[in-house]
Length: 331
Figure 1 (cartoon, rainbow, N blue to C red):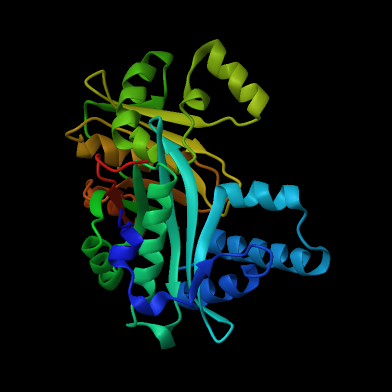
Figure 2: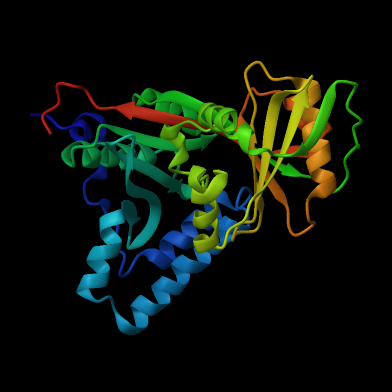
């Protein structure tokens, strides 16, 4: 049977495309990723590159043990494109499971600017798709910035379809305090708010995306079970609720994170009560510690004027795309 890679890959790939060798390639891959994504790397991305370079130095000094190498390569693999012993193309590949389905996640698709337009990215993608098919994956997933039309066109031409579009917002230092109108009240979350909060969180952060973000519903649950979970995890989120005429209109959760930003998790119904949401965001910002920047991840089309009015600005919008393997494929 003809493989996906054989259909999509140009003949020029022969002799240039090979699997990533984590013992020798990490330093060069880190340099390439930094070159290609220098304008969009956030502190977490730069930390990831430092970890790659640290691992490359350890490999050069001591080598990889067989056990460690197998353990690492089982979760992260990938492919590189080499020209005259120089890595000029890269693709990272991760195995993930979502909703009980085996999938692959494609990331860090990078081609050196001097070598673009030669089909290198397409060859790397074709090989990754075939890798997932051979491993029994149901689908291949990736994220791409909405301001990268060339990459979007490539992925669409290879059969990827948009499944979601998410905007990451960061807070600015300045914001306008908002006084809610009569009938809207604000305060700490009540235990009875949890069923609606949980349902709204499930809608705004669906399970097929939640594996990729650090939202843990068990951590947010009120009562003894949630309290014990927070005690053992040493993580204590804070919650604020907004009500219109006594009825819950939204809940906002603040959670300290290990990275360079702290997370806000929003739970609101559809359609959104925009005045209530603006009041909730303003109220929460008045009570939040000035520890580090705040991030809010939401569907891209969701009330951007309200989010901006609360002193947030869009950091990036990512398009989630998915390639579904044919049901008739023999895994």
